[in-house]
Image 1 (spheres, rainbow over the protein chains, first blue to last red):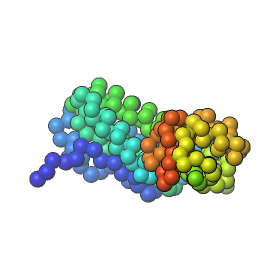
Image 2: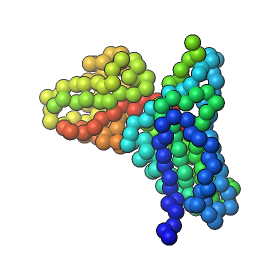
Image 3: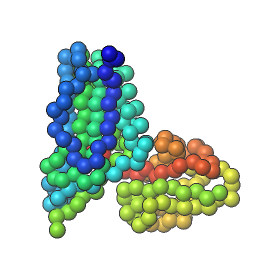
Image 4: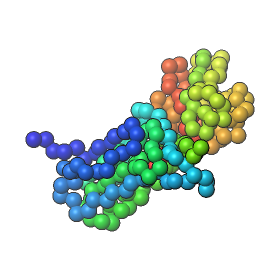
Length: 133
Length: 82
């Protein structure tokens, strides 16, 4: 049986389901860090009902993969799994999930922070608030 | 050469269009030269252009990048993933 891929990138239509499936690529890790982005109920102080996400593909997926490769280039990072929504995500639902498996806590935390900073700076993904009527 | 640049996010909303199109006499042109021409043709996004980046064939590029016929271009303004 072949080894599990250390990088998994998915663009998902609509909100993300809770992560319940096992992550074979994390075998051997001492830490698995999971960050989830949730659609907040307000935007600039106004109530919203949802966020509409858009991705410029295939550039967005390519950049998410490249950021994952960069993270794995860090000492001690073993695997990266990224999921990001496109389309409508209701308030309270998940739009983004990043999982990083690492040998130890510190490199995982640093890689998580670096990944999210780069995503918010460079990856062609946009969200637009859908305000309450 | 006809150059079409895909628009997203705030730039698309400002312009009310999915792309900006400019005609240039040259067979190729760099982004540093093209940007002011886009600003002139589309005043609605002119003020935003200095803060936008260009992607050529899905790669972010600098002012020196050369655009040729058949390239896919996208204007990448402020992104908001996550």
